Amino acid sequence: GIYDVEARRNGFPPFRLQDVTVQLNQAVSLNIRFDDTQPIIIGTRALYIRGVVKNNRGGRPIKNATVTIKEVDGDDSWTATTADDGKYVKELPSGEYKLDCKAEGFRRSAEKRQDLRKKSKTQDFRLTPE
Image (cartoon, helix red, strand yellow):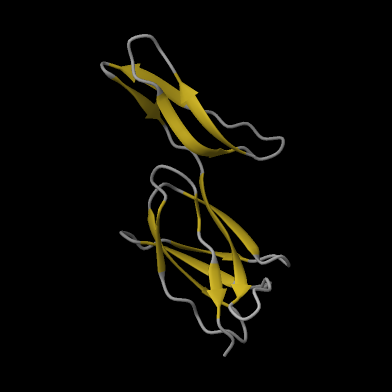
């Protein structure tokens, strides 16, 4: 599931993390250190981009669509393929990304940008048939 986490310590403002994803039967560790006047998270945590790809005409899900994810300030890229219900999910390191989507028989989507430096995001696509 997806959870919001809050850590508190006397004399410090609360520290909040949104959209912490915990997979079934897996643990997530968050190391938080309260230093001087503000809490600091130590280490990294998984962030996810997820969404659904649908036909722009009628709204039906598109299976086997390819979502391409590229770093804005880097050379790394990833792909995710949609399931039968048109949904995709990809775990990514913290960063800013450009995304687009393509499926056989459909026009490539316009490029979208997402900032995954603080929390996971949802990016849906609606593709137009060729």
